[in-house]
Length: 167
Image 1 (cartoon, helix red, strand yellow):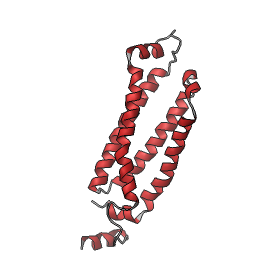
Image 2 (tube, helix red, strand yellow):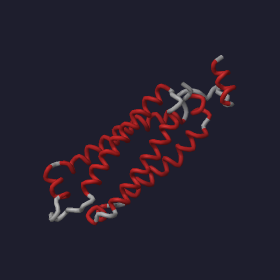
Image 3 (cartoon, one colour):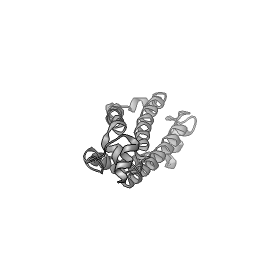
Image 4 (cartoon, one colour):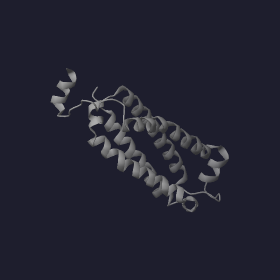
């Protein structure tokens, strides 16, 4: 009865399309893996905070010094911690089938893409970092962009999404 009432309110018929099945299973796997990927990035980035590395990158007069290194390293860390929190929130909302999940998922995908693009733009200003940017970095942005281009419209248009995330 509640499905009929909900369907009448939203205009979406939900017979057979509700539940964490179909493409939503793939979404769930992706979101469950995201925290591990983000943690790996945070752990790799933490090496920059080691005393020897930090001094070389942030002390004027050293060979690798650039005034942007400190804000980039700190900024990347903060943004990755926020992305980690976003991924964990999205997982919680996904399994609780909360109405907020599609909006949070869209925000997470857009933020992840934005962080990668911003990172590449800022790193272009640091000569030593610019020399290290490679095809895998550009590929990472392309992969995130393709993922956002596929999943954001899915969250907006999918009948299953609208029928599943109703709590």
